[in-house]
Length: 426
Ligand SMILES: Nc1ncnc2c1ncn2[C@@H]1O[C@H](COP(=O)(O)OP(=O)(O)OP(=O)(O)O)[C@@H](O)[C@H]1O
Ligand SMILES: [Mg+2]
Image 1 (cartoon, protein in one colour):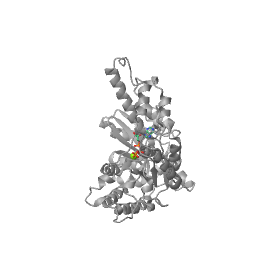
Image 2: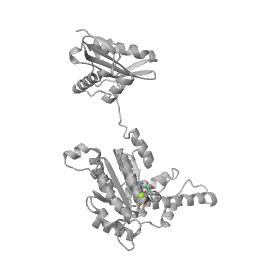
Image 3: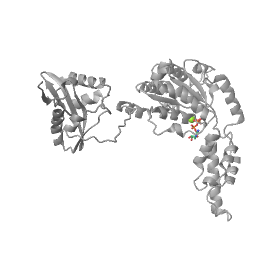
Image 4: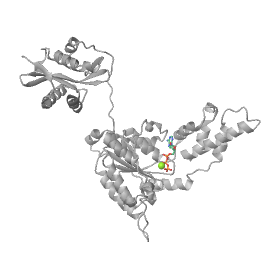
């Protein structure tokens, strides 16, 4: 069979599609997606092999500084072993080399190696390379929306940064992260992934921290809605809230967070009606709309769940109502470690400090730690006996703990336990 090599034309698009589909159907997913291949055909460099009028092979390349990449290289099975591949590669190279390339590279799926063709064309198999890829979670268009909303993609692994809180973490992992991160699996089991949840608990227990950690775990962008900031909007808070949710609906994946939601969703009724009543109504309408589309999660947090309007917590608005309590021993241990300076290191009785701060919130621990450091610093500088000290001692810490008032009173803990009984939904 005779063939000739020529430049790619836009009219060859269908043939490229066929070649790409056939390459895919051999079980080896091409490294570059179809959209990338087609874009390169149009904008970069592509040559095709033609037999009669039929396109039977293609080589597509893209130059990146001194290194060129072969984005797609394929010949129809029935036309192989005739030297078409070698000629395609040679033709592509002669078009790309003048751009100043010193190297032409190609990624080939394991096992799909037609090394003969590549050998003959002078390509060397560089073993011991692995291919890594990561899907960039946010598109360019979404980036603009996010910037407008003050949202961002939270880097790092905030989830692992949450120490202790084993029960809470396990619950969120199972109920939220599992179905949201593997939608196909959830669907197989008939699980409808959650769309909105409430976190409640005393001040400073880590509700905001958990909301961010869930976003980081899912690799979804995080948008916090600040009602107080919206209230200055000329359309009024309700209008601004609606507008914000409209913008949010253009994002494919997102975790939306509203802290202190009781401020805009408190019990309605009362004479005269509270100023926030219209806002509560607006939010009650927005949540069902938000829930219509998958891939998004609304997390609202409150210290004062019993103040919320009854309609707000009614079934259908929130999938789960989850309590977040005070830090347990492990969490306190890790929060302490964060504030103890290296110089004190192992010298302090951490176990005793953890024991003595049962009932402390993370913020209380931070306060006590700073107080102890200040006291030790002053002693080291001004007391004659303290000059040799390296850093705060256990005694400084225990003194500071004794001098710190707990934010969360025992009444608050009592109400929290009652709220768990009557309002939690797990
Ligand atoms: N399990 C934990 N491990 C380590 N640090 C924690 C943990 N929980 C909370 N913290 C830290 O404690 C501080 C308070 O947490 P956060 O702001 O999340 O609490 P909150 O429940 O949102 O408080 P509020 O009710 O006041 O909004 C933060 O600095 C956070 O990093
Ligand atoms: Mg918070």
